[in-house]
Image (cartoon, rainbow, N blue to C red):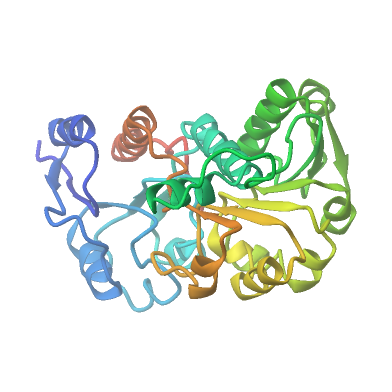
Length: 323
Ligand code: DGY
């Protein structure tokens, strides 16, 4: 039996590339560069399956007048706001993602950003590397304490809950959770969280706010100028969700004028471009989309994506179908 022809749009960890080769007739992206719209459309017309990721252009328009050979687009990653899900469905293409395997890893990075922003770790590192450190003194680079403070979590799915556990058990933080649906009371009790109805209810009460909601049109600029203004002036915003959730221009303004004290960002509106104003802000910690970047998690994401296409070619519904 001939193996399905499968394209990996980016370089994957070696062990999962090997596992893919055992199951499928695989084409690799040797140069490991993002695929543009035209390349993506061509790939969907040539291969039986395309294993794409966040850097590929699969937005609205990709599926228009397409004659796809591919019936499955398996995303390497949990977030899929870069994919025109409705367009794929209309073109008869199943889309899958890789949930669960990156919950802890992403929550670890959100906590890293929270701590770095609170303790001015980025600034401190830059000072040391620049040879500008003048030595210890009582008033040098004073940050803010974390223990016992209030953390607001917007989007209380699996990653938001993992963040709540870290904050609650590790730092004795009080947790406020905002989510579209009612959160299971046992989960709230376990994480010591209290659910609030709206983002407006949450923001003014929090010392830290961490975003864990999906991206996409529905949440575009969820954090805008008005909402930033409703945060405490000592507040710190953390975003490991998707860049479009925060209005970056408004955030720059808020950071520069002291409307909020700091931000920790792993995702940006136009990756890999970062708003020039953010780069100027000493009170912003900026990381290059590292949420899921551990050896273990990146392997598990690959295994999960492969499982989805294996299930699909066996005639079953993939576990992680999203459309
Ligand atoms: C994810 O899994 O969503 C990561 O952000 C990479 O896309």
